[in-house]
Image (tube, rainbow, N blue to C red; front, side, top):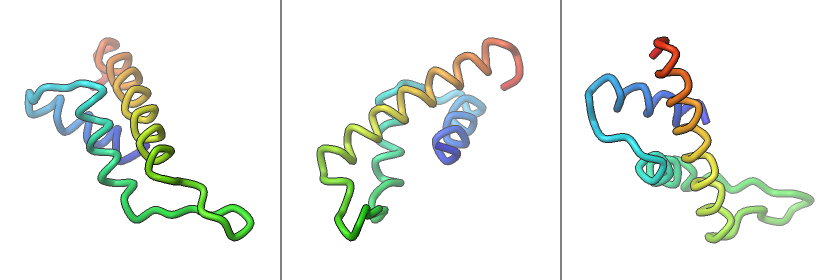
Length: 73
């Protein structure tokens, strides 16, 4: 999530287009290679990884929008 917030800040500062979808794609790439396990079993299959990236992308977008609206970004 920290990487997503950093990316939001970098894109906002550069004037680039921001959207939950762009952030989700960025986070999906960041999640590649992260393979958490629970009791020796992989937790993330491709669909779960996509869902996680989508959730985090939307959350980061919302938090960044709130932060920016308050004039702190």
